[in-house]
Length: 223
Image (cartoon, rainbow, N blue to C red):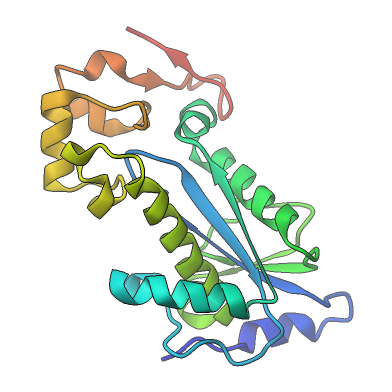
């Protein structure tokens, strides 16, 4: 089923809501690179044909569709948190910062946000409507999912690191990525607090451990 405006229209029926943004992220489960969040607002017009959850689209289709979406959307903006921020702050705080950067960069401030998933990592001051599989149900979230995926994939491909296959795996686990890590160790783009280092005896000493008593936002490196 194609995404619809049902959720957007429910929110817009509230007197206090005039603009709704759909938000989605990509890169949460990667071993390298940033996490990227996209926020999209629309005028409720029909979206480009074939819009759906980015995971259901081939790379060959995602690129042209992203170009169509960028021209069609009433507003689209991106926010990112670097791998250094992820290591230092934890993923929840990194996502929050990336999402705030995206929302604050929109041409108009949204009154409500539709967020894909079941965990609100954005919080105040935006009223957030959580929607599991929102990238398949909501037009604005689906658009955000495609734009975020294409942007982050393109960035990861610029990093080189051919031995690790970033142009194909975008920093996510893959056999080539795992083999290169075991042989060459992490690059300057890898998240050093990730558990993949536990399985690499030769490079385990590089792992960054967040102090469990300090909580999100602080980390310490233990040899």
